[in-house]
Length: 116
View 1 (cartoon, rainbow, N blue to C red):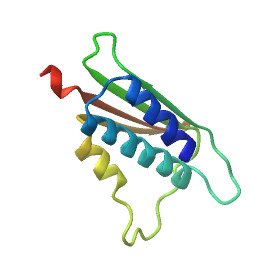
View 2: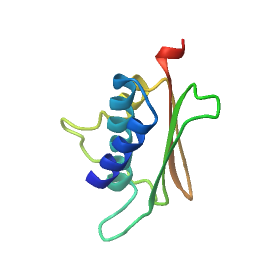
View 3: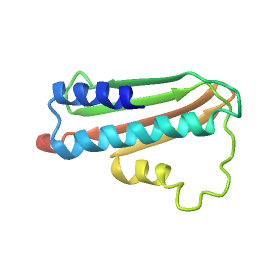
């Protein structure tokens, strides 16, 4: 996870995002990857998690896609945890989560507030 965060921090710096958007991109991508690792595998299984971050050609914002090839396993008692999906919905401008037999895909988008 540390390597993903470091690479994403470098990418958001190069993408010239405002500080709040950059922080949200890194935090929520980390959350989505962590969820993929925790919920897409069962004991002893592995899965592949892909992360793709880009800026649309018009440069109006940023999009991140996190996809795993695992099989969703329902969470146990979340206790104090289990707020990641809600955070993704609250802290991104648009988000979707889709599940299928080939895995789960989280799409998150942010617009650049400096362009509004």
